[in-house]
Length: 264
Image (cartoon, rainbow, N blue to C red; front, top):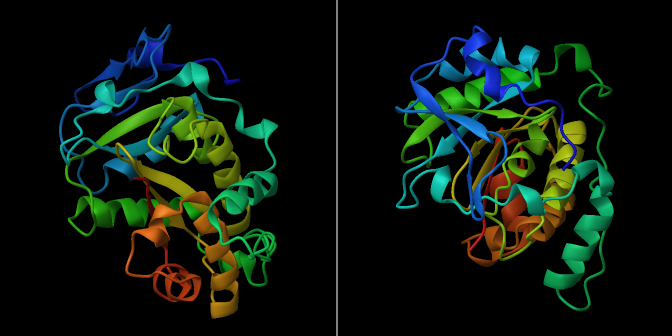
């Protein structure tokens, strides 16, 4: 994957307000040639994300919360494979989703296309629309305050130019049973960044959570987006009580400020 110069080897000289932690280089094939991420030693607290979010992006690092609980240990044991990931910008998000759709949808269900929406920047009333970074910070604080599924959340920093690229930058293989090249999934996340103001805020062994600054506000919009979610992460619907696109759209997407994905 094409990347910017990695600031992590000189992290100690960057002046960031970091708690105790260490660099992670472990991959499934042995130590990577440079650090993949920095990971805090202790559980993150509300406000930690915002503190780093004000300073780390300026030096080429983005914050992420990693869940090292739920019996899966930390990223050192997640079988990271950065060398196997393609560059997200080499893929077209709709082509990726259509391919996934053809593999997982009913045989007589045709790909409906991307959900039509105005981008957060161009939408009516954009001047008063929520800022994606502020929404991300609020969602993370709620997660760290016990309001979510994370078992042992730790703050991490990843060298990436945009939030959608974080899973690919570290070689995350959580969705391997659905797609082994996470760069293709990051291409979809980039599209959701542009259309819905999402930010990747948390990763677990096989889970991903994003904040959403501009979620769908009508059921029709949510149902159109539900088709994208089925293609992106079929297990969200196949192994859920919301077994139809309409139910998933109404309960998980309509006006919801966060989306949670899980791959079996």
